[in-house]
Image (cartoon, rainbow, N blue to C red; front, side, top):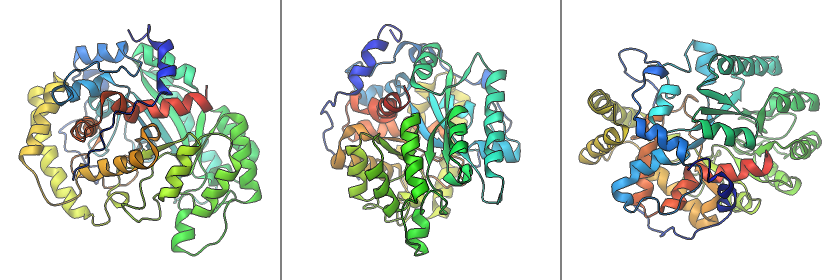
Amino acid sequence: MKKVLLTLFTGILFINFACFSGKSGGNDGNGNNNKPETLNSTKLNDSINQSKKDTLMLAQNKFSDLNKDAFKLHYDAIVIDTHNDILMPVFLQGAELDKDNPGTQSDLVKWKEGGLDCQMFSIYVPERYKTNHFNYVMKLIDKLESFQSENTGTFALCSNYRELESALKTGKFIALMGAEGGNMIEGSMENLETLYSRGVRYLGLTWNTSNAIGTSARDETERGKQGGLTEFGIDVVKRMNELGMLVDVSHLGETAFWDVVKTSNAPIIASHSNCYSLCPNYRNLTDDQIKAIAKSGGYIGINFFYKFLDPNGNPGAIKNVQAKYRNAADKLMSEYGDDLILFNEKRYEFITENPTENGTSVDILIDHIDHIVKLAGIDYVGLGSDFDGSIVTINEIYDATCYPIITKKLVERGYCEQDIRKILGGNFMRVFKQVCP
């Protein structure tokens, strides 16, 4: 079915099914597996793998009882995460993408167990590097390309929608690349064009520090630095539009954000940002910014970092809750891991039977999704976890095996199947197809 329905997928993506009911409800990244597990030995349900190969379109009403079949829906859907920093521990600390690393929040084993189909890898220069940023990111890209060449049967590094579509048919895990922080182009348009030629398909114009492109959110808000996009920054946005490269405004100062809105003639994305009105952090988007991104036809990937979700979050409390849930999940995986649907049902049962008032609940993450949907519509929100970006996440979402919990919570909030598929991956696919065909 996946191959047959490909031609229908694109048209359906642009249709807004008004089936959201409007209901509302109320990590240090350290796993504790005893030994690394390779991708080849990951316990994956054969029926789930087949389903991934058979469903590309946003099927409507494929499951008659979402309360019962939430986890089946999750593994049937196309799930995309638009921001992840796993390349830092891989490049700097010796983690391996195809192992179940005990010290990372994500890797190919965890992604597969969590039902992820496509990861946008962050190409990022750590603060410790003060010079030669462009050379550093070239080496990061080399490493990801080398991994693909060694795993051509299971891993696809894609640079446009056609390649993404083709890889989804094969069931390979899909990698895309997005650059975080315009400092890496070192004030050179030629370097920007080289990033594009190497397959990088979004550029976050700033990180926490300002650069030749524009002023960062942190500098503008916490350090009182004035300014928006520079003249060079305006030229960068225009050139990105010409190339077919997504403009990412996560980390960008608000003045510069509005300069992007005036300049860009293509959809704008925030690959890993949340809602300022729910959590007033400099990294989050105001309601006007959210509406402007939606008006551009763009996309916002919800960040899992507790600081951007919960103004009252306590990392110590979160880590205590996560340890409890992770320990229980490890035991359940050893017993039920051959059936990921059953494993997730048992894990969720444990979570619901062992509630806590401590830490930051996944319900708060769903609140941010709800807010964007109610403010701008269903078509503009997705997942941008920021896993392995030195973040403490939230109670129930301690690593990448936990994506199915988000789907279950969306069902409980009253979202219909079509809209859940959009949030999990369809919304980003629409934008990616438009800008990077």
